[in-house]
Image (cartoon, rainbow, N blue to C red):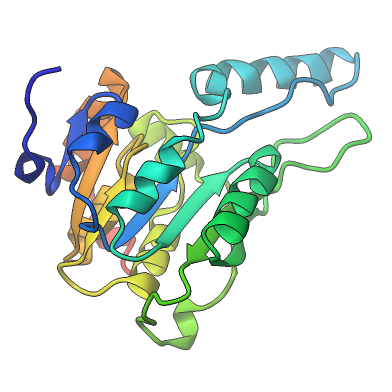
Length: 251
């Protein structure tokens, strides 16, 4: 790998492998980690009806590249680069136990379970629960200082439709609502703080930081998503049109 300077990673999204690039980030230099990790998703759960099989096939094709989870050794690196442990981790239900045990049992953190509740989930035809909730784990070290107060920032749940419009705008299957990401970052940081997202996808975390006057470090391994996210930082949609995202997403 060519030599990379930490300063060159600030306030941009770097193309590359997060497991390697995170090594260039100094110890105790990041104020907050905010990541949406590749989900670990089990197969099965659908009936044998044609509709059920079609739905399962579409869902699998949409997220095939990001459905096999992560190497949990990166959690050690995340703890190394944080000044004090403070992180948000979006994950699948299959990952909740392992990640929680790491931060609570090994790192002695407090944990909050945050949810995004979707009012229009994908319909299911078998006797299974609807996929209408996504989980975000928030971990905070014992000595991590408290930050911003404000009743409007403290809800553990967020209700909205699936953000189909954002998926179309930025061509990413698991994009999170910008308004919700901004709420979390406002709750947990001060202006000019440094936020790390080493699985940046379409760049939602970095866009939120830019709009909230936070510094950020983004890392994305996929060339297609990297280009989309850089364009997004510059106000350009995946189709090349100018975005008005900033105007419609203010809190």
